[in-house]
Image (cartoon, rainbow, N blue to C red):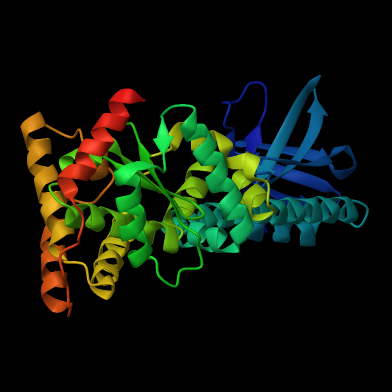
Length: 367
């Protein structure tokens, strides 16, 4: 029974020509067009060819040139093996085995590539969950070391203080918002005029002089502090640092090597972007912390609405505190709804806010 194959030779097209082949006795008969050729089996060499090494090839020399037939169809290869003469069959069977080995090899390679691609997709899809898992593997001591590293870098760029009416007001409000926390919080005022505040890993919160100047009262500052405290409590800042640093840093930080994340601290300090999910968590839990502390809930909403108006007057994004957060209008709407649902026996803070602002302004000018 003849089987389909391709015949290759120096005078034939590069891709070969269709042929029908069969073993008759100890000779291979090859029919292509009106031509029939015969090749003794002992002249044939068995090999593997094709881009994926999935094609059986029989070659021989004729007239000083190499001729070949190739078979890609598994059924055709099996049929030809059954026809092969006894002296040639083992060689042809060995070629078939090599072909099967290459097929398994390529299936394995494709499987590994597919699996790796799937892992990448899962890692991208679940990147937040993965970095949260990594952040939660970091010991409290290591987290505090990372925060201290960040603080030291910040001190090289800005003047910080824990003294004066501004720092005292922040510390007083913060103490009410962090009652029962596992962290020993430290509160700082920065001479930075940018309207911003941020939390460092390990319980460090920094409020810019620009933020204090922008707030109309202590309740608005309390809203910002409540939000930033939740970034510490939920390890959001640590999580984003790990995400930005990459997997090598993840392993190093989990093992306690804080230097692995120093570069991120240097370049991303105060500008790490949290996801919508993390920001909403900080907003919602920050509002709950305000209610638990008996601090009016309208301060957070009032400040962010004011900052949104200021950003509009600037003609576009320009306030870091808003740039790193979800859509401000949506955020304000959600906060207003939550404020209406929370029960709070709230009282205005007994803080002389104009005196706080004057104190911070005088310190910044002197710094």
